Image (cartoon, rainbow, N blue to C red; front, side, top):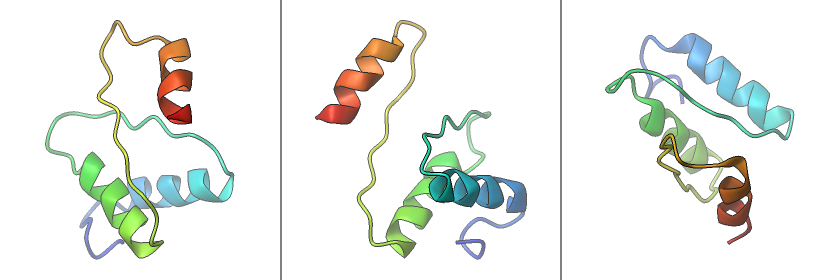
Length: 70
């Protein structure tokens, strides 16, 4: 995964910590910082499914709960 995301060692480390802790991750950052690419790369390396939620200010935590159960 680090080969796919060059120069983002801290992001890769935090993604792996979140995975190992069996937690949820909210990845924030400016456009073009390879956030989606990092998660897609991790999912591909683990042979896991990938899904993405585009966050907007009107998205509530309850809505996230409904989305994650789909």
